[in-house]
Image (cartoon, rainbow, N blue to C red; front, side, top):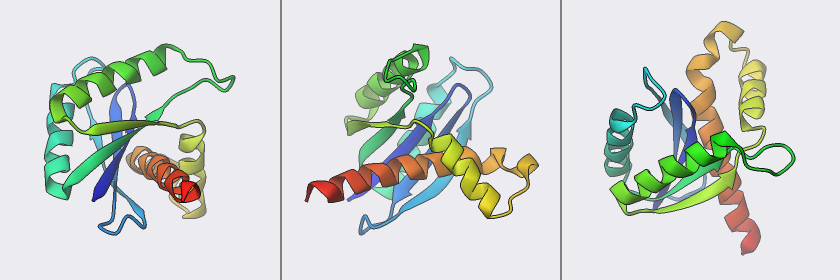
Length: 142
């Protein structure tokens, strides 16, 4: 079984997928769209990736506020999850994504990726961090 991790944003969706043994989360791609509300092609791309990687479950990062409250971004993410669930029929798990973008940026900095180049990678690395957090939560339950 493979699990997909998604870092949903206004104009991008970072995508990561576990390896076949579910040991690691690998950044796959960043889906970019021109306008915030135009999601049809985004959903189609995710559906193709689900098929390509034989994904059986999806983990989506939830953008909670630092004080544990939910804001407009959380509401938009839930709408995205609802439509994704309807379209794919897969189980979708919400995972706290606070500070994952900061962590992704720190990883890129450690790898000496120039600041001007980081935008290309940050969302898919954040998706991998979200997915790794989920995998770690599964391992801690065992």
